[in-house]
Length: 174
Image (cartoon, rainbow, N blue to C red):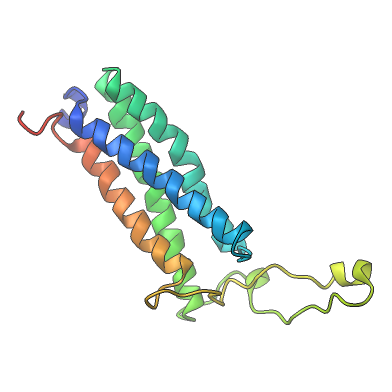
């Protein structure tokens, strides 16, 4: 058994769990606000990138409760590893999506640029022609980064926090 897993959970695991909980909730809330308030419809890859956050938020809550409640260290550290792996998947997916947006490589065949849809006529006929947003077009950029680009950075931070929390000594002074 690894020495990191035999150490008790402590302050560092509590802090890591709290950062991951707040970060996951803030990230997914931001995405939903951009979608429902800002009107930015997510593409197929955008939706895929949300899954690590949907899964990590409740896991981080359990890890936080376990660390604060002095549950066995294996539970807290194991949950942090799982969150780290989920965020690693999100990191890879975000890199892939950002590369598709910059046209470094091809994206999914059913998620490429499409023309606009005229909704002024027969709406029932128009439904068949509506396609979701294209994965290869960034609808918004800030400081040169799209939503996918910002997710690369956020996911990387969360990967580091999760694996640091899983392997760190329990307390700063220990």
